[in-house]
Length: 263
Image (cartoon, rainbow, N blue to C red; front, top):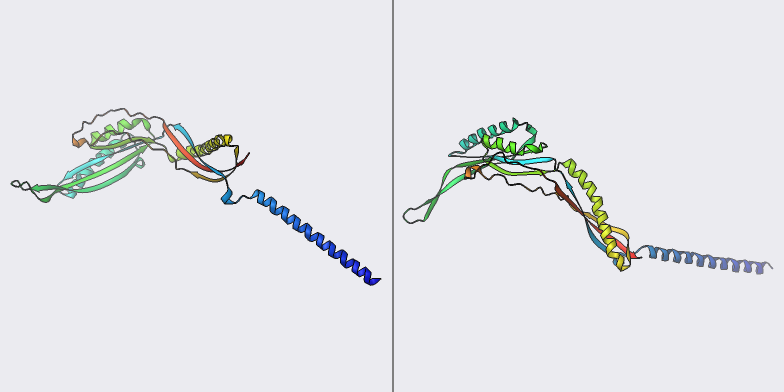
């Protein structure tokens, strides 16, 4: 009696173990199938790459002018002294207009030797180069929020001795650039999404995720406005020329790689 009971219990435990193992295996199979449905191997991902853009027109808040003095003399010391004297007069003249010292920067300073080619008058053949002097160039830039006095700054500088005016242009301050860029980034991304949706609709596809977003640099090329060439090269210098600011187009782009799937 005891032996039969023991056998029955062992058979029952074995059956229960088999059923439990089958249940666990079934659950693992179901979980693996569900996971396989959710995770798509990278090699089988379907994607669409779209570039979105956003543009706005803004009023610049900075005036930039670049000008300077070039002098020439037989010695480098003499050329530097002449240049310093003329540049000090130029700086005094523009500071009298209310330009602060921290609005003035040195853009470049250089000294060049000047050579003359010696030619044999009888044969017309080059003989040698002879050092005849030195040219000193000192270029400064003025960056100011006073947008309406560009013409006055140039007039004062030229009258005080500046013989080079290289460029005049308007730009954005870093603070304004950052504010505009933050606004345009979101608009560029939304533009990319809109383009992707339009392209996918006739294909019976839809956006199911985003794999990559790449943002471009802030595109604000300040167009230099040519004003004077070198005054000592024979060009006529016209003073009191009006300089008008205008709105500038600012653009940013966003490259977005969308994950797509069936509708």
